Length: 147
Image (cartoon, rainbow, N blue to C red):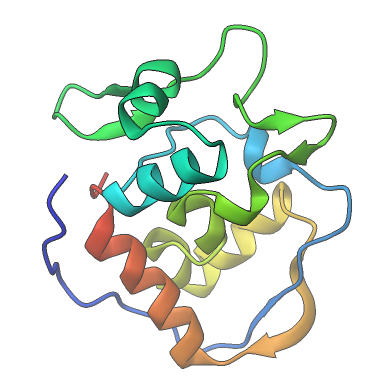
């Protein structure tokens, strides 16, 4: 997947409060795809002491548009969600690291509040500076396919 600079992400002008809640893996069990950048593949493969090709063969496939994504195992939400935690947390993909600050969530207060239905960390904790929210959302926009 090429890293192409895409449009600038719109970020709403409201207070973004978020604090990941201990023991919560709700973001990992929601329906959807986890797309991977080339950096994600390199980082995760190194973390698992595997070659990049070995990682791709074991955990990835291409969607109909040719974008790389994690496969979903038949018996669980994610290959790496083990015993209620991410087993590759230190090397998890950008899409996972940036949650909940995805472009589709940060443009409007209504979209942000909607996340609280499955994410108990929304509205909790300190206000996240807008430049940090924008940087995380823009990193996703630039590196991952738009859906």
